[in-house]
Length: 263
Image (cartoon, rainbow, N blue to C red; front, side, top):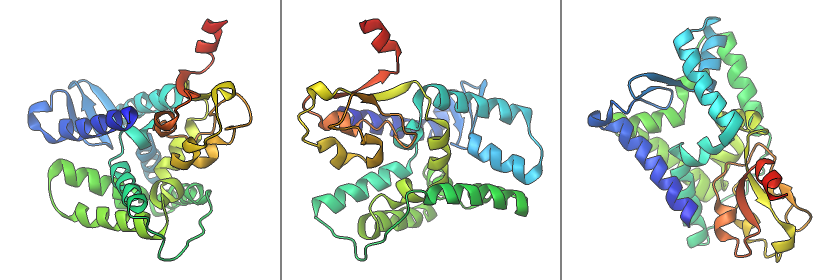
């Protein structure tokens, strides 16, 4: 449970920092565009990409902020944004908890292609260029929810309820694992990030608890087969697999560096 607790602490801390005016000297703005310590600009690279395609222009200040975020995730943290920052993750995790707790079966089984999110990503960028406005930013459920929490209002609750119902009653993990174009964007850029989940076959007793709890089960294809870092970009570094592993066969590592030090 330690990584679940840590993730919730990080997610709620970010929302609190954004929400409280007393903390504006630390973090001000929202997840699309903000300022850290009243000095360092931070911008969503995916939002910037949409804006660039829509306007064929780029603001250097926004670009510098986007590069800070892009480099952090692409070089180090991978797709950790989805599990450690995005507020929608709290809703979908809760929907998954309710579904498992009460043994809910989907009202109607929906077969969804895992590549759907990449098609949505492509369409978002295409229509941002064609329509000359940032399509996902204009209608983003992520933006609606986080701005609603930060600035107040009730409309975000309706959106959150829709997401909860879809994930709990229609298609488990649909929103984050199948549809979200922002998640697809981070999956594409995070394949070579340094922070990985490392699997040790010799310690594994093949209980497969890790696969049962993983929201992106395809990333754990090596379980029971061979020693391997989780290299697929879809891994959100949530730590669920590590939390449930009683064999100490899974753990976070800085790819290559730890192994070189162990030699």
